[in-house]
Length: 331
Image (tube, rainbow, N blue to C red; front, top):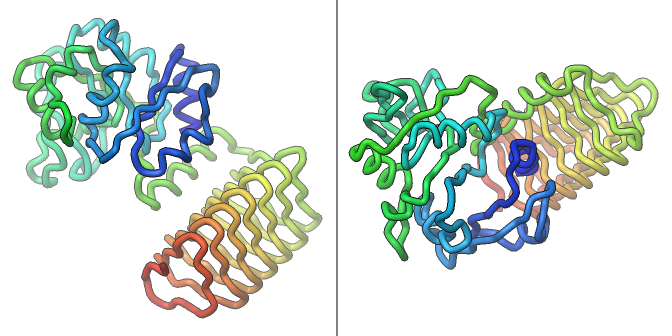
């Protein structure tokens, strides 16, 4: 979200509306009334209203004066938001969808393009064989206030399955194709892929905060990022593709690669972490082995000499005292 907000600010945005339901208080606590020089509004749903219903719910905040951007929250991209809005105004469409080419479009909404970037057909998550193209909905939209007329009030509405097909039939749906970095980070594998691509593109030589303490005989394989007040003890190996957030403590002769470690986590001596996502404030004991595709929730405790097999998920605050040798969720 910080990446997206900063990009919006650089593109000239002045106000942002968060459409919230689950864990809404966490967003309010983090961003308050402003972020990156922009005013922040909150549109909270008593029950989830879907990707279209949330827009209708925020109609009073958004208003009807000018076009606006609608962004999925799990997208990491270098798209030019100002250009999307400019193209939308030029095309005089009710909605413009940012489009990105992918090899397998079956996980996404897929479009069929007619002349002048008009979208002739929009199909949500078709089978690979029935996809009309490889151009997918990139989760970035420019919308005119006219769109509110296409969204029912007081019920769950899918903008992809209900609103966009209706706009396509009425000839009011346009597309904007772009080739910049784009990743849907809603799945763990894609999240780590996003981390990898950002490190490659932004921090090829690595970045270690001035207040971080990386001791002697630590082997660093760039690209990596190490945050403020983080500590890496002697003999450890970090990287490639590792992000250590602020106040992460890594013990002696630990090994971490292709992983994201959130703030305040402690990783003890001789522990190995490969291809994992570790939440905030986690305590990981000595000689622990955490395999690929593992996810450790905030404030979990992993005891000494525990091994977690590929794909194990540990829920927040869970204490793990024994080996977990098959993929499962520990609640």
